[in-house]
Length: 371
Image (cartoon, rainbow, N blue to C red; front, side):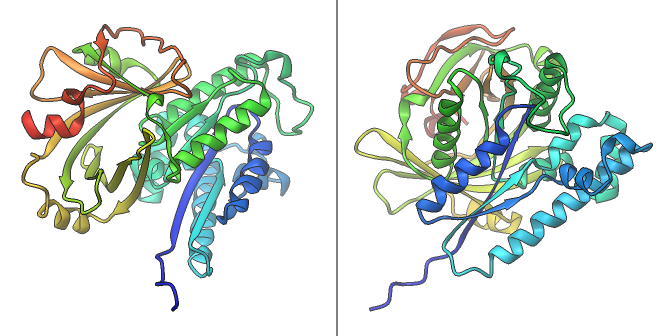
């Protein structure tokens, strides 16, 4: 008997990072690791490098906003072509790896230039950022591995270590707010850094990961104006509801995510395995699909609303959730690489206590009893 046809799953991720971060080597590691597991891996080359190699480098332009507009336009056209071709493949799992993504260009523009690009492409910062399924940022060697920072292995690299760190910060700030941003720093040797990247990608693709990598804290209600002034902090409006599941131990969540009237929609499935590891998979929904599913929400849970401040600081990605039913406290969550990792507290945040593993501070509990 033939096996039933399984739907094709195409995931598009960004590998980005500061100068001399290991991005080129990372692409090779990704190819070897995930091809062995039966995933078809496709690569979209870095667009700015292609233009430079073709005789049109950024250094020659007299109009940065037009140059960045064309880079972004070409980048998205390439991604669209790769995605369309991928749909013709007889492969169930396809991973499209983008060597930099559309929001990388924001790090090389001022706000007026960035708005020019958005207007001429008839899009928003949210659409450019979140049309990728995940973003993995490799931190420049100039931060934490200074002895390995070099200009010798890339003819297009010109930054001093200080400039490399500023570029690294600008890139992280550009992507802050993405629902699945992971920052891979230099706490390991280079091979360890590459293995950390592969673990993060594998977890994103649905492979189990230890529960202990997520830590949650109850904090004093933060100074919102202080958060909004931070360069690597982005406010996101979230509305979510829960669906019934016929799979034991599975929680299904639908979510609207965005700001200023621009939203994207997701369905997430979470399962806790007997060995205390978790599996999480996510898919994009259309607005109409989200609204249809919202009508089917489990009545045992109310619709949950919150403002989330995504903060990139201390080499980590913090998510600070402010709920309308709390005026004196909030919840901060951070993903770590291992249970032994310390959690530096961001400036301006006052921790009341750790609440990792406490049910009453989970979103399903809050949706059941508070919202």
